[in-house]
Image 1: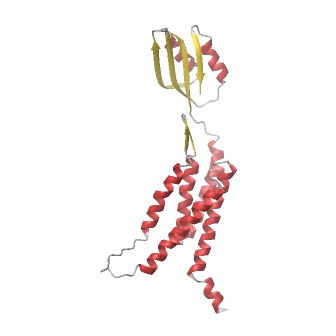
Image 2: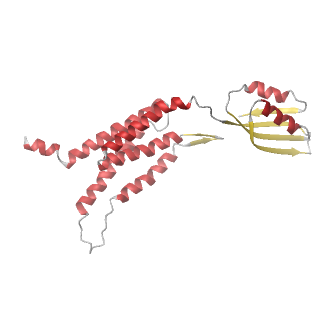
Image 3: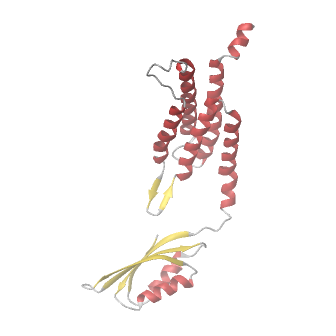
Length: 233
């Protein structure tokens, strides 16, 4: 009986509990990412949480075993050094899940989740169970509930409007009038003119916080004389 109690209270048993807790907390966040079809899902988050937890108590063990070495020798142990390298290293993993396509960027939330899961694993690995559980609960509330609230908030959406037409000095004012009539704002504009073929290309970055019919919007430009091509994306 004494041997069982000794085993339960042992350092190795504590570490196994930490690994299981880190895997559970990080796995919860990973499941949410998995449900939404993200590249870094359940397995990735679980592995990051467990690995960072392991690194923390390995660092703690090194310090406990060699931290009392005499100051006269050249060996110096800093238990915070491993933690610092985890924070740096997880940044490369997070960068791998961020995808930029044109003006759209995907994966920022997943990258932040990986970074946070690493922090949860580190906290569990060093024995800060309460903060680790609280951060996990906050993260789940953010991912599940605040996301629903975000959908109720009107957000600006940005589009690139490209118009190709025959050269005319009156075109720019007509184009911008159509944009403003649709309650949109012009963020940036670019104009190219090719006098050899008598053609002009107008490129506008426009923003709006309301849904609109892209077919009707494009049709308003095509109804103008001299329009050759209109595109929005």
